[in-house]
Image (cartoon, rainbow, N blue to C red):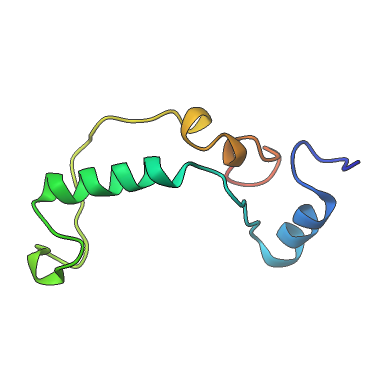
Length: 85
């Protein structure tokens, strides 16, 4: 058994070696798609038509938030001793 909170020993070593760890299936892709669709709709843009984008990068005002513990529990549950945790 790993000595880390949620990371496997190999994930912890990957973080030490590479500075990141990949978290597979950390959130529901359908929920993410809903948020992406909402953002495009809010901006009046089409993801399939870059000419509809007002700029290559757009900062939008605040919008409803989600709790990362609910949206991405596997990502949130990773070992919080690492930077960004």
